[in-house]
Length: 252
Ligand code: F6R
Image: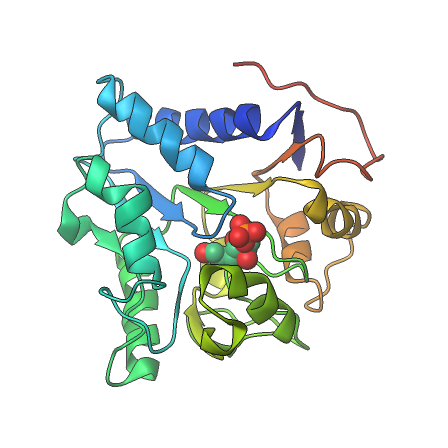
C-alpha cells in the first residue's frame, strides 16, 4: 500500500485529480469509481478546472458511484445524483447515459442492487475507484459488520454515519436509515483504488486503519490491505497519528 502525505488538502486533492487525469488520458474507455461527501469536492473541482482548460475530456468515460440513500432519487436535494450533478457532471462532458448511481427510489431495491452489480461487471469493473473513509472505517456505505458483503446491497446505516452526515441535511432526523452501497467485492475488483482522507477528524480512523494489516469486517477499510494497488492520500492533519513507514511528499 502506497501512502502519500501532502502538506494540505489542496495538494492532496491535486494529487488525486492527477491520478484520475492519467487514467482518462491513457484509457480508451475509462471506468471511474466515484464517491460523494465532503472529501472528494476538491478533486472534482480540479477535474473541472482541467476540463475547462481543455486538458481532459470525459466523453469516452463511464462512472459508477459508490452509493445512494434508500428513498432518495435523482431530484432529491440530499441525494447523491444531485450531488454529482452539482459537484462535477454539469460542468464536464460526461455523456449522461454513461454515469451510474444506484437508484434509491427504485420500486424494487433488491432488484436495483442486482442490476447495479451486473452493470459494473458488464463494463469490466472499475479502472480507478475513489474512496473516502467514515469515522467508523466504512468504505462506500459498507458499515462495520461481522462479515463483508460482496455485491451491491442494502445496508442499515450506523448511527455514527447518520450523525456525521447530518450536516448535509436540515436535521439528523432527516438522514435516511438505509442506503444502497457497492459491495466490498466490487470495490476490491477495481484495478486501482485511491483512498483520500482530509482533516484532523480523520486522524484517529487513519491511525486504526494503517496501524495494522489485519483484515477485519468490523473495520471495513482494512480489506484494502489485501488489494495490490491501493494509494492512500492524506493531508498532514489526517496523517497526524501515522507513524508507520516513511513519509512521501507529493509532487505537483
Ligand atoms: C460517499 C461514501 C462514504 C464517504 C465517507 C466519508 O460516497 O461512500 O464512504 O466517503 O462517509 O465522508 P466525508 O468525505 O463526508 O467525510
